[in-house]
Length: 420
Length: 195
Image 1 (cartoon, rainbow over the protein chains, first blue to last red):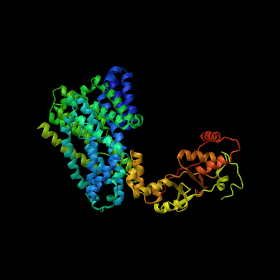
Image 2: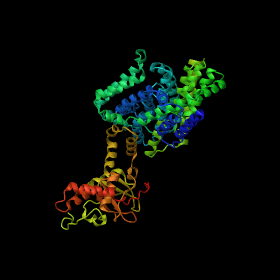
Image 3: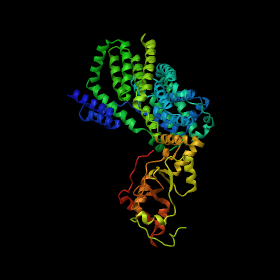
């Protein structure tokens, strides 16, 4: 009976998230509470399932990002980069993609694209062309860039915490395939966007922009950039010193409060509390199906299907995750697959390649459709507001080839490094 | 000066705007939906007291409204975009910047029309301007052609000027706010942008 109740609550929660009949945070909290109300878990077990390393890591990084985005530093970087491109449409696209990808590796992708998009819109207006190719390229670059680090994408944070992988180890295993995927994407972009860009004339007025004018608060910018760099350095040295990533992120957030003397209420008001509570609910829902043995049974089935073959399991995990992430939210997907990987590990399967395959699939797969990741949805909304709507089908022309190429490159990397 | 001061008129919260329109000095600024924004700006500066521009189609029907401040921002975007870029912190501000940076004519920047009818009351006018955060609203006839304009500041000052002697200004303002909150919705029929 308990198994059926847990399965129903789990499926109901995921159906509500997928169909958006309820806000995903409300759906996850409701699902988590129903696991307690129906006796699948007691409150103590439910609360123990919440991974506070994930919650506080996200919270700390949100605080730092919220301060940074108000300083104008990203707009300054984007203007300088566009000026370096000397008004050439192709190089403008390249530098905007590079900045988007690098920023997305350390900040959440939505913040990155919202801050880079305005300079993109300005450049497109100056060129007198549609901003859509640039905006789509930034979506793709953002999701690839977020793959590179432990803090680049929420699935990475979930996987890193569950697997007990520290920041340098994560970067050592994920940054190379992310770089390869990004390089492949740029080559592909030449074909995907080259024709549209070749019709555009070189713009010279971009050179007139005064990058320093984009900086809203120089003091705040210096402090937030320093804290961000120190936090990244902290991530690199935390593990040998015995600290978890969440401690480093909270240290960075606290340093922001101390150094800027900004009212914490103002900064905390911009924290995405709904996202944090979404994670809280998900942890409890997933713990419910783990507790009643559903995940173990699923892992058993998967183990039998693949015969425990590491190569088959790893590559299948990457491509199935890639396909799923284009359609469903990759956060609940990853939260569910994590205990499956752990169960496979208990059956003697080497888990390291599985973690990287899951992360690469979940992150890169988000590029497939316009609803595949939060950054995609945000840019689509922004494009529509500015009179340049991106339709579901028109995006697929760029999304599907990019996912196929980037997952192929990632598969090759995983095979060469971990499976050969 | 208009004859308002020579013929003092006590207008109340329920007075229709048709009865007070001719006592107010500030008139409407009307532009065509396809008017270039630089022309709109020139017209706006020639009538600086009208802070909400009425945008009309070829038949002269109201199809949108355009705050002067948004026209100013659009010009700033052309001259010094970085000044506005630094204020972009979320999707909404990014979207507004995107609209301004790509705008060419009045229709590109205008918002859905909000307006008063001649039989809308003073309280309707205050309520609609408070609700939509506009500092003025056009008055339109049955065919939605612009026939007048109500400016929030001018209306508020006239209202206060004509209070009976001895009524404290704060009490009158509080009374008006209560009245505005209690009033039914003003006559506003948002239409499509008509671009």
